[in-house]
Amino acid sequence: MRVIVDLSKSAVENAQHYYKRAKKSREKIKGAEKAITRTRSKLEDARTAEIEVAAPVRLRVQKERAWYEVFRWFKATDGRLVIGGRDATTNEIIIKKHTADKDIVFHSNLAGSPFMTVKVEGDEEISEDVLNQVAQATASYSKAWGMGYTTLDVFWVLGSQVSKSAPAGEYLTKGSFMIYGKKNYFHNADLRLAIGMTDDGEIVSGPVEAVIANTICHVVIVPGHKKSGQLARDIIAKFHAGIGDGDRDKVKALGVDDIQRVIPAGKGALEKGPRRAIR
Image 1 (cartoon, rainbow, N blue to C red):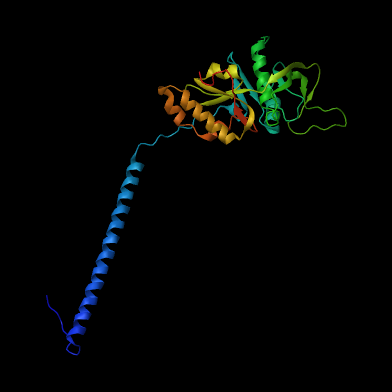
Image 2 (cartoon, rainbow, N blue to C red; image 1 turned 45 degrees about the vertical axis):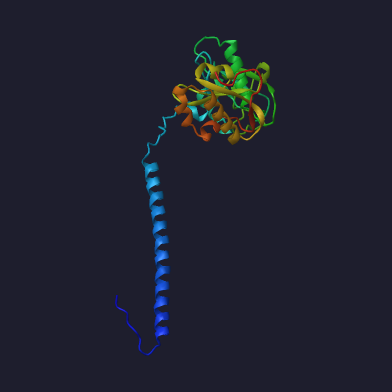
């Protein structure tokens, strides 16, 4: 090792000069060691992230929606399709475009109720069970849900009794129609719905009997105090707890929004009581 001595300085001054240089070198070495440690840590984090990204990702395939899925809808226990309005615009579309004279139309006297239409072919008769299911859906999807009602009177008429023609001097707003002739009432229809998952992983909602008949698991909801987001998370948790191992991946693929879109407007709750939530 070669040491250069400054002859203009004393031996002590030369020694102090080299001591300071040695001290600075030690500090630089420590700094370099810390930098190396930080770099190694970042490399390890990046390696971990790379592994996570490389892991298989479960992709949800978005199926093509059926024409009736823009409305409220369910399949009755006899397989019959029932559609209902979500708002004034869809009420208008249902009556004008999807309701024939012989079809059965459900509604209520409460403002903000949907029009629910049951298709009738020829001279066939609709069973009392199916009519009860539609009555329950009409009550549950009305504003009565958000108002905390437990029951609501609803009625049905034929499609031919529903008209956009108002009496002289009156005006009908979008989604509103005149009902002419006799109304057939269902008194005290329950505000109570089921939300279930079909065998192909789709989420459906509707009257309890209808949903049970068409799904592999379900929960029952009623008007309550939980916001739809929290209620949706509770429902997914119930599905997780009650579903079989073979269908668990279908539940894992669910998002909160999948459940929220079928919950009536307003707050709700899981039904309490002796009825089993999952079958």
